[in-house]
Length: 265
Length: 327
Image (cartoon, rainbow over all chains, first blue to last red; front, side):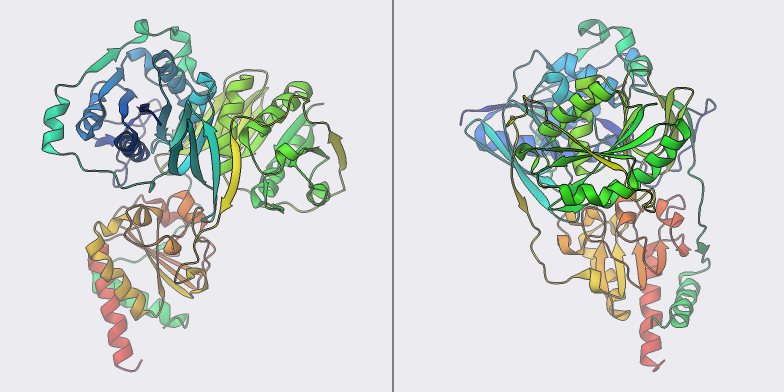
C-alpha cells in the first residue's frame, strides 16, 4: 500500500468542565471571555490516529481548522505533534456557523486537495451536533464511517470498527478516498514535545478567508447555518438533590446515616 | 394532510427503544398538525417487527431487500431519499444513535434537508420546525428554528421521551425498494461483541463510580477503597476507559453498561447525558463533584458539592469505623 495523504479537521473548543457558563445580553450566545480554550477532545484522537497511519504507511498529515483569532493554537499543537502543514480558515463572516456551515467552509478549502482520508472527531464538545464529518463526506461525494474505534488500511480500502451501543461494535469496509470520524479512546494521544514545538515553527500555516474560497457570505456564518438560535437558557431543574453540606466528616456521617436507613450497610 | 415520518431502528431482530420513544413524540406532533404518523421499517425478513409496530402508528411502511439485512447508511440513504422525495413528509425523525449519526447528516446533504441533531424536544409552529437541544455537555439548552426548506430532519436523543401506549392497529403498506438499490461503496462485515470481562457490574447492588475528577490513575485506590468498604463494585464513566485506567467492562453509559443498583455513588463525574442514560434508574444516587453546575446533580438524590479527595476518604473511614464497631 502506497503512502496516504490525510487531512484532519480540528476545532478549538472551550473547556467547560469546571466553568460556570453565562449567557450574554442577547440571550442567544454564551460569554466566552475568560474560558480556557483547547483542542476538541475527539479531534485530538483523530490527529493521533492520522499520525499513527502516517507512521505505518508513510504520507502526509494536513491539519485544518475554522476558527477566530487564537484558533491557530490548535494547529500549532497538531504541527508540534507531527502534522506536516496546516490550513487556518479565518474570517469574521464565519462566526456563528453551525455544523452545516462549518462543513461547507471546510469543504470549500479541502475539495481541491488530494486525500486518501479526511479524519475528524465524531463530535465537538461545544455544540455536540456530531455532524460535521458526515456532512463533509456528503459534500465531497465520498463514503464515510463515523464513531470509529479501530482503523485498518489494506489495498486501497479501509476496514473500521464502529461503536454501536452497549459495548457492541460493527466492522465495516469502505474504499478510499473516504471520511472517518473517530470516537474517544480509539488510541492514546501522544504528548507534545519541546522538539516538536520547535519543528512546528518552520511548518507552513496557510490562512484563508472568505474571499479565498468559493462561497458567498450567505453560505457561511449564521446565514449559512441550518439552525437559527432563538434563545439559550439554563436547563430547568426537574429534580433538586438534597445537598449535604458541612465538613467532609459531617457529610460522611450524613451519608452513612442515609445508607443505614436504607439497609445498604 | 401530510405525514410525520419516524425511522424505526432495529438490530439483530429486535426493535430498539428509541423507535418507541420517537413514536410517542411523533404521535403528539401528528395530532397537533393533523398529519398521519408513519413509521418506516427497512430490513429483510422483518414482518414480525412490522406487526409489532402497528399499534403505535397510523401506517407502517415496510421496505424489504437483502441490501437492508443489516444497517448500512448508504442503502438506508437511498431508500429514504426516494420515500421522502415522493411522499413529502412534514418532518422526518431519526434516532440520535450510532446508526442515526451515520445516516442523518449524509441524507440531509443529499436531499438538502436542514437537520437538527440530538434534540430533546421539537415542535412545528407556523410551518416552522422548532427544536430544543443542549450544548456544552448539557449545561445550556438552546431553542432553535430550522431553516425553511422542503424537507426537515430531526434526530432525537434516546431516553428523552417515554415509549407510548398501544392504540388502534395501523395499516402495513409494503413499498418496493428503489430499482437502483444494490451494494454500495460501504459494506457491513460483522458485529463485534465485547469480550466478557472479569466482572459484570450490572449485577452489583452498590456501585462506586469514578469520572475525570479523579485526575490521575494513581488516585484510583481511593475509589476502590470506598467500594470495598461498601462491599460494592467500581464503575466509571467513559473518559476513565478511554485513558485505559479501567477496563471497558466497568464503563457505565450508553456505550457501556446500563446499571440499576440500590446505590450509585458518582465521584468526580460530570453527568453527561450518555453516562446518565446508563445509571439513572438506580434506586439511590449520590453525586460528589466540585462543580455545582455539573449536570449529575440534576438526577441525584443526594449531592455533595465538594472535593472528592476530601469526601471519599472521610466516607470510607466512617464506614470502616462503623463496621469495626460491629454496627
